[in-house]
Length: 145
Image (cartoon, rainbow, N blue to C red):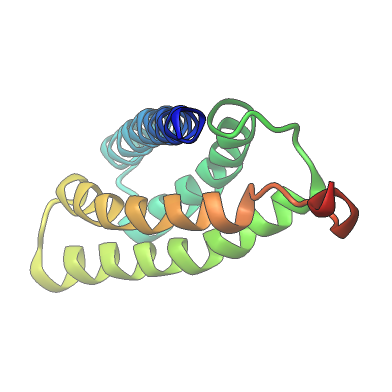
């Protein structure tokens, strides 16, 4: 019983550390994204849809690199890149559509809308990261040992 409890505490600590790494990295990446969008919009008089789309594409690569090395401590691989872009396609398109819809439809400031949508998407993405993108794969022979 004592070993079982120790293992459960260890698992919860590990999960908490993972959540902190994902959250702190996501916050940093979101702040960089906001800074880039606002800075480019200030300097260039470009359209939000164009700037936000370009910044989102660049930040997708940066996010994959960060979460591979720091959050999940895994080497970069083609498999995680493909999985990362699969989840990114869904979440980024939803994020892009919501941000532009609210900015253009309601005249809301882009940075506030980015913060709101990023918060909701963060929760959903963290689950997808842990359960799909960076999931440890074990073969049938390893499960029986």
